[in-house]
Amino acid sequence: MTGWQAVRRLVPEVLGVLVRRYGRFDACEDAVQEALVAAAAQWPVEGWPENPRAWLVTVASRRLADQVRSDVARRRREEADALRTLPAGGEVEAGDDTLTLLFLCCHPALTPSSQVALTLRAVGGLSTAEIARAFLVPEATMAQRISRAKHRIKAAGAGFELPPAAEQAARLGVVLHVVYLVFNEGYTATSGTQLVRAELTAEAIRLARELHRLVPGDGEVAGLLALLLLTDARRPARTAPDGSLVPLSEQDRTLWDTEAIAEGVALVTGALSRGPIGPYQLQAAIAAVHDEAPTAGATDWPQILALYTVLERVAPNPAVTLNRAVAVAEVHGPAAGLALLDALSADERLSASHHLLSVRAHLQEMAGDHEAARAGYRAAARRTTSEPERRHLLTRAARLG
Amino acid sequence: MKYMLLIYGNEEAFNSIGAEALAELIRETDALNQELFESGELVGAYGVADEVNTKMVRVTGGTPVVTDGPYAEAKEFLGSFMIVDCDGLDRALEIAARAPSARHWGVEVRPLMHEANVGP
Image 1 (tube, rainbow over the protein chains, first blue to last red):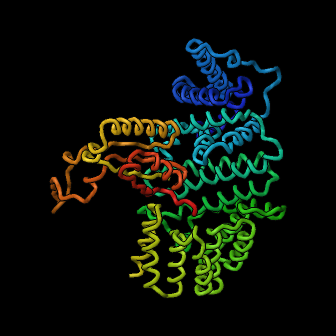
Image 2: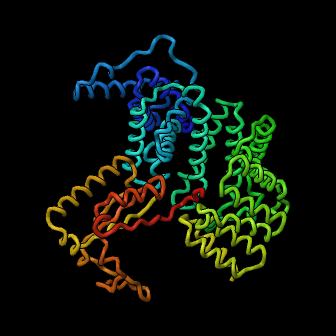
Image 3: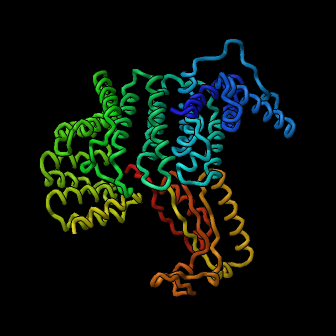
């Protein structure tokens, strides 16, 4: 871990202190970002402060005071907006603040893309420029998205406190989904901004770790962390030197990260034994079965099929059914898998999706019907809007002559 | 998800609706762009210059050849385009319906290829 990564981890803590002291989450969040920029400029030149956290709190507080003073000068702000001082002994454990911040950034009044952006900035400590680069949009666009998100939170009247106990489970679900989205955005990128995007997967894993530390008893939190670790473990093997995707069955498994796999397996095993079982744990369990197979041929497909069957009951969703069809084909033969797909074609959400077309082509290829498979891969390639996936599907079609 | 909105309209079309309607169209377009910028959904909005300024580039035998045509139909109808980054097709269609051209000539909504695989 570099020094700057360590500094970034102080962000939720510093922000928590400021919001508790002064209120006004939006203004505090800006001030913390400004303090980070100042640190990046000064510390390498003047040396690192003995207590980086205190330095950031002090500088951010000063920025906030400057901002409030200039606001007052400009617009004669209401008394209510003047600085409030913190009652003595008001500083609390940083951990509590991180969870509070995560709940705030994943407020239901925000769209998913705004939740992601705000979480990365306020909890992850990434700059607007970094987030914009990761999502391939102009910095001005991202700055607006973040500022709009903060306004929405303010307008919704959300304070800096944990949501009521009754709401926490649902809100935690949103937080998990946001962390998952961050990971997915970084994991599935194959070109252009590779470095920045690998940072996104690292950040998602860090956020999941942080959540697991804060709510260690929650099986789904453990499940998400396990899923991310078990998926990320394959990253070194999933792109060829030319940048193209390498499917799981063709990956060089010696490149997988054994430490991450061991940690993921331990996490998911523990979570499953404690119950109740949820979708993240089941997806992690499936990833674990794949990761534990020394070769693609040694994959325990009956076990994967059993897990998808449970997952389909717990969280029914067409994508899960598609994956189950692949497992059915591996266990009972491609004809059985194709029969399941025919039942799915009636589903409007799916009939036009490239996922269905590509899975069907895959099963047709397994069955030896190369002509149908080739046409199917091409049709799927036309439907997808993902560049790496399109290339992959066209390659699969080309391989069939 | 990023979408490209091809906003139909050309010199002939702009001239056909009358000065008042045109002024209103420009006002509405500016307001929509501003609103999308403020919501953090606007990646860019660009007016396309008149067809008299259009060039065609083809590389033949390694040499770029620049001509005034022949074109596919785009030069005939393309007035402007914008790129938005929003939470899905429904929202992109909602934005397209807000563009004044949707009332006059039409707006084509096309998903842009992206780097990430999104879930179904």
